[in-house]
Length: 383
Ligand code: IPM
Ligand code: MG
Image (cartoon, rainbow, N blue to C red; front, top):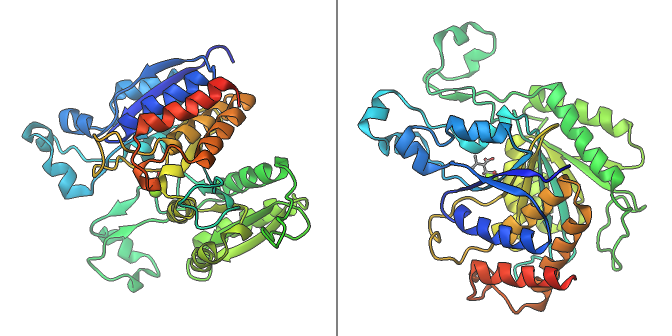
C-alpha cells in the first residue's frame, strides 16, 4: 500500500486525549501515513442533529481505514433533550455513530484481544491471552426496535406470548454473518503459533497444542437465533480439524472466565454477548485501559479502544492510553506493517513490566502523555 490515508476521529471525552497519545507512538514506530481529521461525536449531535455528519462518512469512504477515540451516546429522552428546538422540531433521532459505521461499512468482525501483560498490577492472573471475535453487524444490534409493538405483529403465531404494550428489539441472526465470523475465528486460530501449554497446567486448552475456539451462545433458550449461529460455527469447525472447538453457554462462560481465564484462547460469539464478554475480559487484564479493538470488514476497518468517552475523568489528562496505543498496533498489523506492530506491542509490554510509569487506573499518578512518551521512547530505542 502506498502511504495510507487514515480517517482520524478523536470524538468525545477521553477519546480526544488518547488519540494524540496513539499518534505519538505511531510516529515513534516510524510509520508514515496521512491522518485526516474528521468530525464525530456529541458536539455534532447538539449542533447538527447527528453525531456522524455526511462529510465524515465521505471521509471514511475516501480513506484506507479509520481510527476512532470514543463517542458519547445517551439513551433517548436524554439525547433529545440536549438538542436545540430547531432540530428537535425536525424530529432528529440519536443513533450511535459507531454502530452506524460498523453497519455501513460492513465491518463484521469485532476483534478484541485481552492479554495480561506481565507485571500489570491490574491482572487477575498472569498468562491470560484471550481474543474475542464478536459478530458486529446484527444480533441484538439489528436496530429493529419498537417502543410499542405494531398491531399487525400480533397476527403472527407465537406473538400471544408477548405482552401487549411490550417494547421489543429484534435479535436477527443470519447464517451468512455467523458463517463469516466463524471463518474469521478459525482462520485466526489456524494461522497462529501452536499453543505451548504453560508449565504447571497454565493453559489447558485442547491439551495437544492446538488452538481452541469457543463458540459462546444461549441456544437452549434462543433456539432459533443461536441455533443458526451454532450450526454455522459447527460447519466451519468441521473444516478445521487443526483447531480445537467447543461450545459454551454464555452464563457458564462468564463464570469460567472469572474462575479460570487461562483455559480460553479464542472466543467467537454474537454481537451483544461479545460486547459484554469483552468488558469482562478487559477487567481480567487491568480494565478498559488495556482493551484495544478493531472493527474489520472485507475492504475497510476502524480501530478504536473498547472504552467509552469516560466523562468522569475527561479533561484531566489521566486516561490510560494503552488501549488506544494497542489499537494503533492492530491498525499497523491490518495495514501489513507486521514488524512495526510487533515492536509496538513489545514496547508496551516493556513499559508495563518496568513499572515506572503508572496511570491512576494502575494505582499510579502519571498521565496519558507520560505513558505514551515512555512507550514511544522504547520504540525509538528499537526494543
Ligand atoms: C463497544 C461499545 C458500543 C457497543 C456502544 C458504544 C454502542 O460498548 O464498542 O463495545 O455496544 O458496541
Ligand atoms: Mg461495549
